[in-house]
Length: 384
Image (cartoon, rainbow, N blue to C red; front, side, top):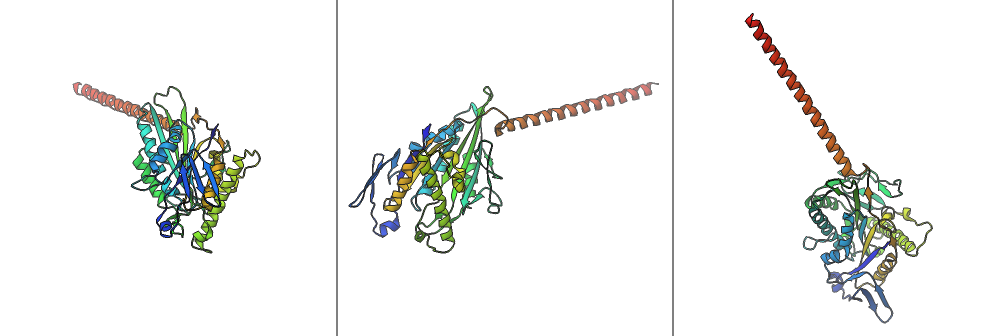
């Protein structure tokens, strides 16, 4: 068994907070974040604390890379950022052109590993969804937004999204191009708290199949990696719209995150009764990542100037770190693996080509024999 790994990342004060004279009230030391004031003294310790000077590359290398390596071996993995709105979640996951986030850094690492493992062959396919107002939308569908995808359970009880677009990719450039196309469709808006606020949860999923090129072991390992950018919790006054679309989006986001928090809380207490995964699309899709077959890492992003909302995030983080998962290697020995089916299709095509070539050769030989017989017959007639 393996506990969910939890790190806290403290962002630096932003321009609005500096302009309003807000001061950081949270401090960090080693793997502890704490606040000391006249009213409250509170200390929280986690697997890792990243202070305001940390970079996305440091977060990836020190915290996320082991999960990526495990996925390449056939384990499931999940990495997601959790925190209030404007706390740095999307910056952590997506980054910028000058400082790539965890998702592009993960993509780079995956293809570096593939290049350094010539004895194995890989098949990488990706999907990208957003959960907007409790609708599951396919960000890679050319008819994006026209269909609310349905979730069902397979024979193993795992959530499967019906009719989800999957794209096979062969390079980091191709995968970034596909992902950026999907990212451009996400619901974002300007709010009081954030100039570009995510109004939906997004899950970028990579499925990586691999096998030995010589086929000596006959097994195909299948690792699945979920990279999750959650929308942030926010108070109604922060959305800048007390009755309209932003308010409705904010309400849906908060309800979804509330269900996630409830699930985390119950799992952290070791409850064995009913866990309400099915109460929201987010928890239903991430069920395997929370107490199931997955290596999971959560980066909780916090605002150093906020007391109440940062305390709420740290409470969530404290619960999450108590949850135990049971990750196991996923190996397929049947023809269910896509990479094996591709091999079978290629062999079938080769056999068809061989038959066509043999048929063509037979017809050519028959034609030559026929021509030779005709020539011989003409020669015999001429001699008479």
